[in-house]
Amino acid sequence: MVALKVLAAVAGLVVVLLTVRSAIRAILVPRPLQAHLSRMVFVLVRRLFGLRAAERHDFAHRDRVMALYAPVALVALLATWLALIFAGFVAILWALGVTPLREAVLASGSSLFTLGFARPEGLWATLATFFEAAAGLFLLALLIAYLPSLYSAFQRREAGVSKLEVRAGAPPSGVYLIELAWTVGRMETVHDLWASWEDWFVDVDESHSSFPALAFFRSPHADESWITAAGAILDGASLYVSSVDVGTRTPEPEFMIRSGYLCLRHIADFFGLPVEHDPRPTDPISVTPEEFDAAYDRLAAGGVPMKPDREAAWRAFAGWRVNYDAALLGLARLTMAPPAPWSSDRVTEANIVLPLLRPRRRT
Image 1: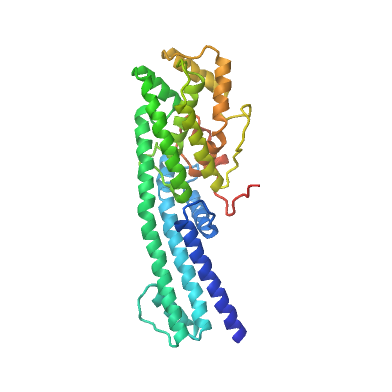
Image 2: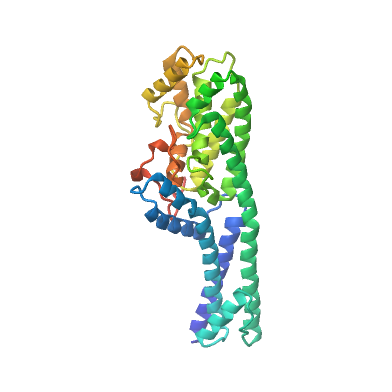
């Protein structure tokens, strides 16, 4: 019996320490650390939601279902942390002499939720309940402090997404972005757009690495998404650099593309999506030459000055697009993004990506 109690105390202490470690890694550490417990909860909740958001339903239904996924997963994560703290201290209290097991359960629940109706006897058992009450308050305080930062980053992200609808339409399109800028006679205004979206990508990279759950928070409008907006602005910049004849070379769109593909790669890496970090310009991309030709002809028909060598323009566009193509499509599949040209329109039920319980390790 003594050996069994020692084993219970050790097991309970390990569970408590691992749970607190998981909470610290998931919330307090400002870098994309893998918190396996948090990941497991999000993956399991995602798979349950996937049953209600199957392809047999229309997208409007699937979007309504998936809009609840991230908030429900956060609540489930808190519940999981509390349940593990509760179970761990039940084992510890039982090992410290709080018997029968029913009394250990009552004492643990009373301490965790600071109810105070059950008080164990003995100095060590009392100290254990003090630590359990502190652990429960610690977890609740962490989540309460976490939510304002989470929603602040969400609002900053969505402000950029909503602004882009004015320039790139809904769903957003890089082709329409260039076409509209030329139509209104203010092509020079896109220079400010490149600079502001470079800042947007930097902010998203930092916030979605620190708070990975943000990737699954959906936009207020069903036809908007942070990932399709990212794809549209990157495609617009790639078309601008590769195909639009603007005279002198400008560095702003090129810097923006670089900040964009670095952002998408970092987020894709965290979720274990396969991404090539040093692609060759000749590697295949999801946009076909025929699609590029249709976009080129559309812009030329609208009066946009295009570079005369279409073949060279295609090679330049593909060389830019290859940097973010895999990450863009992988994140569109992962987040079940709404249909948008050259990004989530390539996603089907057959290639939707579910998060892995254990991410792939990079070498």
